Length: 76
Image (cartoon, rainbow, N blue to C red):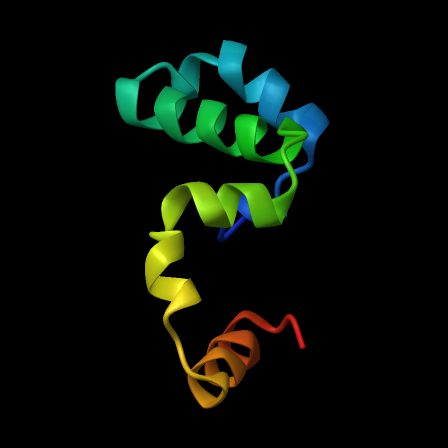
């Protein structure tokens, strides 16, 4: 099967790709490991979000702005 995006590859196949000679270059290994890490990360999404975003900026948003952010993130 040919994949167009790494997200289409099953996790089992990602682990196999780590050892496959076709994917031993640094870029492929980095991409595969990052995808596996993302899939197996047990950190809740909201914790990842607050770690990546200045929470003071979020706390200072108006209700309308918060609503727009929620719409963008799909968390309403």
